[in-house]
Length: 128
Image 1 (cartoon, rainbow, N blue to C red):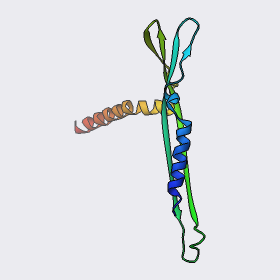
Image 2 (image 1 turned 60 degrees about the vertical axis):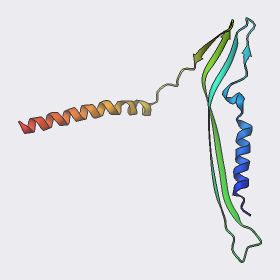
Image 3 (image 1 turned 180 degrees about the vertical axis):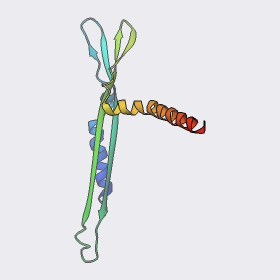
Image 4 (image 1 turned 135 degrees about the vertical axis):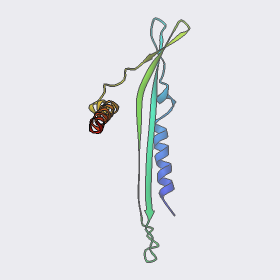
């Protein structure tokens, strides 16, 4: 009998244990002055697995099996909902600082435009 479904079921169960509704909408925090703060997060989940039954006629009783399953959860804070006197205000969490790779990707369109303009000017000079 294949053990792959059992492995995947076990992995999904572990992910369910790690991530619940409190991972997305956190427990409300009440302050003495009547303000309630509710954290809101984004949850990303990924998992995968694979395996193989290696049964041979000579070893059919041993039921050899090879496989593996892995998974991960990423929780990213998005904002806080602030409830005071019946009104709700959203306070976003600041985005992380840009990395060098992000800045390079942002520069690509401008660099391509400059390169295209340069090549166009060279082509026009050759035609004249």
